[in-house]
Image 1 (spheres, rainbow, N blue to C red):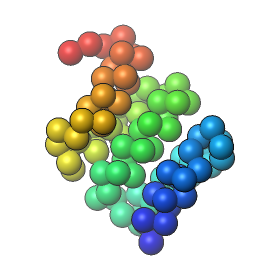
Image 2 (image 1 turned 60 degrees about the horizontal axis):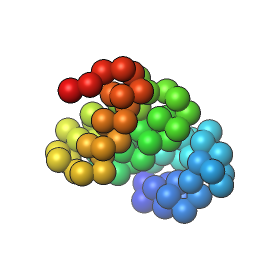
Image 3 (image 1 turned 60 degrees about the vertical axis):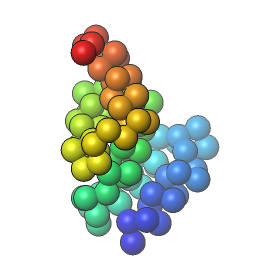
Length: 88
């Protein structure tokens, strides 16, 4: 179930399990539940940690489409925009 993968990624974040493994967990979660804004946002955070701001921004935009105005995701989206040199 997708919640298992969210839990594994959350309990074992990038600095513990490595961003590659966390990314794989969130990607698997999204394959099972593409409507999970939490998985999109957390995968976006992992991608941002990997300096992949383009893909992070895409994931965070998807999370915000599914659950608009989430404050943490808005901040992460701002971080991705800043990393790309784009400011709104």
